[in-house]
Image: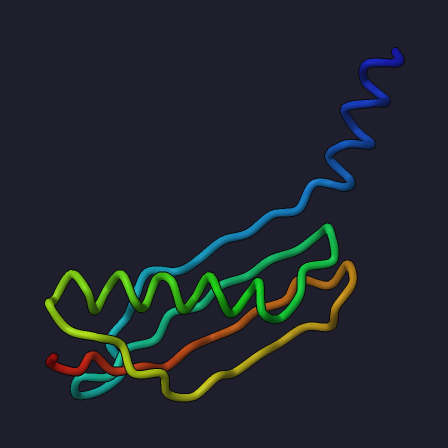
Length: 92
């Protein structure tokens, strides 16, 4: 019984993060979205996930990423934080 309670309480405190696939949203323009919940993530943590994915995507094309617009949703705490990055890949 104690092990079950420990497992349930640890799941309560473990955070979760996810990141979408990169999708095209216009000529040479892409969007990626990331989400984090639990463990009180910061906006920089959530945005970092999107930036990493965008950089990897452009690097695979032999280009570099140019940050565009951000859309953020959620409130810090137990509400999931969501950050959507719109970006372009620029030739080096």
